[in-house]
Length: 378
Image 1 (cartoon, rainbow, N blue to C red):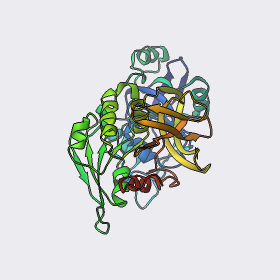
Image 2: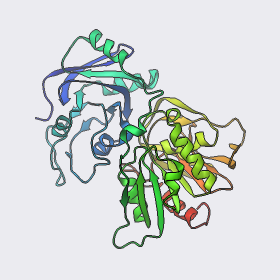
Image 3: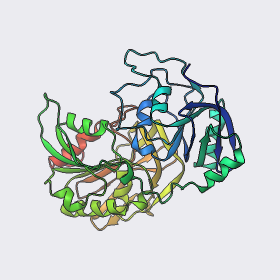
Image 4: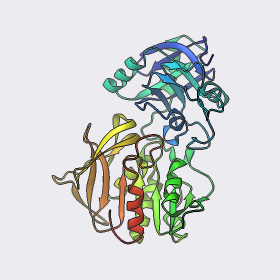
């Protein structure tokens, strides 16, 4: 059996309590309670550094069906603080499976809970917003657990990029059949393994640097382009990355950012960022390119966003010249992309590497390569 019969409770900071069975490691954990609407990709979700210090509820009813393997990991470990599912798979059924999800969570010390009310939990978070929460299999006293939930740190103001980032530089080369045409420095704010692989497949030799690298350290590699990755936490707390971005922009080197990297570009260009009510997390977010009217279905994982500039046409002035909003989310109008008009810098809020998710946006890596070729936006 994958699931256990040990009772566990989930308590939200507003006092809402959900009771179920312990899943994964026994014990207690705390984090920001969020939900993911993806029907697939639970292993990539668990190992995505952007989920650091978050308890993730999966809206898909069955989780763990295909087990865990060593090929689909997006980082060196599981980063979620806790895991909420409706019905854990009783057995893993896949020729690629090497161990069960239950065993992987237990081995890495990640506490989870199986509850019948994942739909009610998701609707509650949509109505009330993401909030702090705790999971425990060591107490059934919800008031006692709530006290510890309220003592846990909030996500607003959290600098987590440096927590999840690599501590040492490393290199990702193109596959043997692909010629290295570009040298890219990727700033690891919480990068997924699929991202440098996707750039390498496009002909980039990617040097990955720690989150707190300065503009001088980034430019010392004389890159053809600089990439700022996804990552966890509040962009307002990552001023070191904003300053690095401004230094790279001043040097005129082509820049591409995704997710947290997009928020860092927005702040470097003078826009504010803010916390979304419940964020975008899943593989089914419709995004419109305002320049073409085209729509892509995209993979998302973020709880903060760039504030829309106070202009009627989405254009605004920056220290680096005119800029514009290029993409918006069709569900709620949130900024999903921006660029400098007369300089080689752009970013999107979603994940072109997917992992998991649709590949509609994979062409953005080609757009980055076009910038490094001096050919402008695709």
